[in-house]
Length: 259
Ligand code: NAP
Image 1 (cartoon, helix red, strand yellow):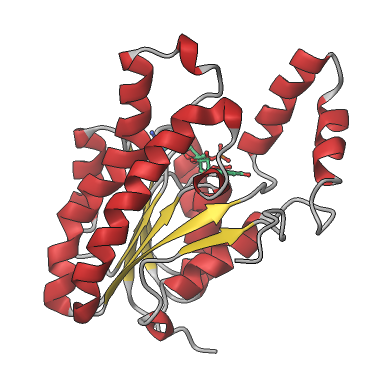
Image 2 (cartoon, helix red, strand yellow; image 1 turned 60 degrees about the vertical axis):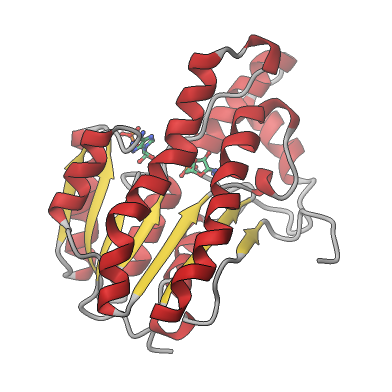
């Protein structure tokens, strides 16, 4: 299927590694020119070269923290009229809610709720005027089934999900869609770090912690970031204009509900 994305322009946030990088790669394979962001300049530049060399599209790295106004302004300045926006950032740390004060909550809300909302605010009216826009927010399976020790993520991402549920219905008549992709467990650096921290607490190895978790998934494996990227490219495609306001869980069937 031709996704109809040749020559389009995208901002993909937090895209030097992991799920963001996979989304950037999949869009580049469809001929989309990219602005990609992350905080660490060196890794970001290496990723930009890698994707540009592999696909031939233009990839502009813009280093900065997407949770800050300056980071977001730099991304939008490099691509003021994007057709596609993929919102992403690192997830908040795990812990017990009794340990979290205002600083911890504000950091989670800034990063995982307000940053995507302010980026949407910056680009959505241009998308409406041009009568094409695809916005995808990378959230988490924890929005559908909360995970007890990541309450900061459960809370902040639910706030984003509630806000975009309303906005999606106000912009779709202009061929602008907003959807959320909810990762289950994908084999990225973040997942590997989680297993290292679980192993430390349990007194096991990271491999043992990973194996135990892998077996709980009906697919018997973790997700491949490439699979995530392809789902993102489809949601961003010219063919998906009637998919709007949805929360698509990509978890190999781990969530046990019928719906
Ligand atoms: P990852 O492999 O650790 O990659 C994170 C990427 O985001 C890196 O490129 C990182 O680069 C960048 N980044 C982090 N914070 C940023 C910020 N404030 N501003 C700009 N760039 C930032 O993580 P991942 O597994 O792809 O996860 C992506 C998102 O999905 C996270 O929010 C995570 O919580 C969520 N998620 C992941 C899984 C999973 O199984 N992998 C499951 C559920 C939810 P720099 O560090 O250089 O900035």
